[in-house]
Length: 287
Ligand SMILES: Nc1ncnc2c1ncn2[C@@H]1O[C@H](COP(=O)(O)OP(=O)(O)OP(=O)(O)O)[C@@H](O)[C@H]1O
Image 1 (cartoon, protein in one colour):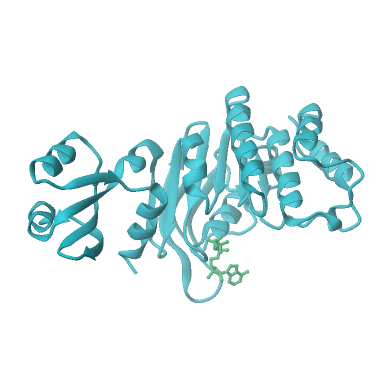
Image 2 (cartoon, rainbow, N blue to C red):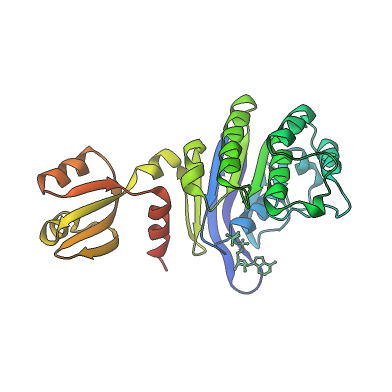
């Protein structure tokens, strides 16, 4: 469905993305995570055909998307600040969706308007940040596009609305299997509904894999300094804090039986690191 091969892209002299590659062959929900300015939006623009790679191949359903109108039949891309016409109301935005996307579901769009407390006649220019995010999300879901790309869809939404959003996303994906690519800073919240994850950092440092595997990684060990040093010898230690004579360290290994036994036999406490903390530390190490 998506092929990105050895892609490099720069706005100026310095590349933002450098020699990145990943394929997405299956339907599902993929989270795109990275720190501010890492290049998430840039990657999404390349996939939606808004930008052209300087080097490498980007393909959507076998076609390079840049400047290809026909790719619209496969891709719905909702940008973070989607440029709606200023004089439009909510109904106009839904009509725009109906016009562009051949599998558009107007009944779904109307149902979602109620859930997110939006009305046909509301002027888009007067919507709050969260309401505008909700409208963009509604268009993304109702498009039923084979590939739906949502840039920071939860921007400005409160916790209860975000919860509804994740639930709708998963249900919609199960009802109409397709590929969602979703950039987010709320990785801890969205990870339970995701199948895979893309982590962008520092140009070429790029990870793509199953979220189940990624979730397994990262443990906290706490206990006596000597014991900690003994068991972490040769391991990738991502964070260290001193608690008097004790140490607490984050180690880049899976939270599995082997490590639970090692911790127990050395009198150390062990805990799983949250995915968000793990990724923050993981992307710290190559800076
Ligand atoms: N049109 C542009 N012209 C020049 N530089 C740009 C342009 N758009 C983005 N950049 C730069 O490219 C880098 C990556 O930006 P991008 O928006 O892709 O990051 P992001 O991961 O989506 O960030 P955020 O999480 O803050 O939204 C940043 O350094 C940004 O300043």
